[in-house]
Image (cartoon, rainbow, N blue to C red; front, side, top):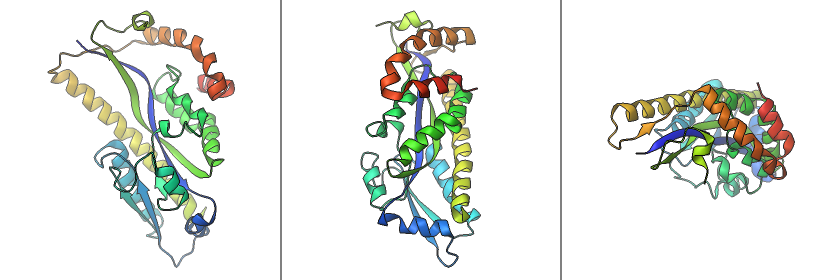
Length: 258
């Protein structure tokens, strides 16, 4: 039998290309040229019928509503324009103005983004979102900004799962071995809230479906607070190993986020 347990986080990121001569359109948009309609290409790699895909469409609709048609966002799902491995160079070239690559794509040039894969550093989804929306999230956005991009917001896609066909994994020992710019940002914040709600609904739907109609004979173990705390107590001992990669300060700020 397979056993499933919530462990750590997967997430995506919204950003907009900036800097250099390639950003004249964005600069003009920020100044609010009332006689121009600004076209934005938003590229992502997942299906339109996913939380990220639906949030991208929601964002496009809200931007056009809030700016009274002055900004039109054209969404290209399923890597129609570019995949995540090449999207950063396309942002710099201004061939794409908005993208939502997974966090793993940031780590080669922003090592601090390894924070999102530190095991059990996030207590639950509420804690994760507070970290994303708080001081730690701002610090990481500034890291991306220093690389020549504008970091807008964080979209998550639920928590990683791990499974085994040998025995239940319950205890840690079991696992041994402005103007228009402001409206643009407002639309992104609304889309972020929408995406998180969609992600939570989809995660619950999949779990309920698995419980109700399971042809794979999967047993799902949901940990209580005491069991999760024991995992956190074990995992915290390895966090110093991440200090050189991510930074002690970021890890401590994450743990202390309330």
